Length: 232
Image 1 (spheres, rainbow, N blue to C red):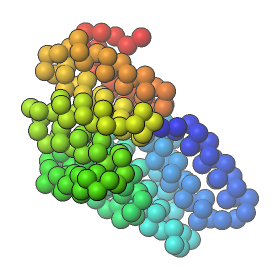
Image 2: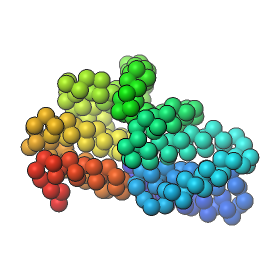
Image 3: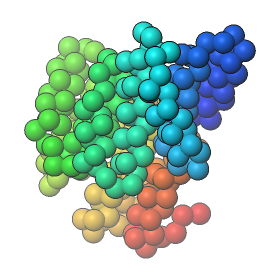
């Protein structure tokens, strides 16, 4: 959730890579910067994305190629999801084959799987996460499993969304948690529970704004206005 710090760290890494002449490291920092720019909705995404595509055609990446390609796919999928193209975004996520990036992008894979009508594949991912949670694996797996269950059964979404928030640690994946809180606020508002939806939407807005993730802050603000209240 500390995206400003992450971006500053990437800028330092980029400067260092140029100084020591490590082109592969420079390319990798560029693709991570493209991902952060997509998440934050900054104007530099287009330029960074074009630069990433240019670097894809080179042979300088070596062993970093799988990581580079996976992060690049995640960045493009994020941008397409924001542009309301869940189908193409989901297909990009499916192409991710680096284990670490696949794990980090699991929330998006589940979310976009249901949004794009690929519910069977999304449910398969949920089953894997549920097995991990049952085996005492990563704590976030329990949170994401509950979120996935909410997407599977829209009528019973509320208890699953509340469970996802309850089982999470306060500092655990704050961006994902803010998106879950946004989902709960949306669900409540659309089920005519406007008063109850507002605190969740306000908390989501505060989280998104503190992280600098403008597209999600704007979406949460629209939902809050639809509930009859304007963000402060």
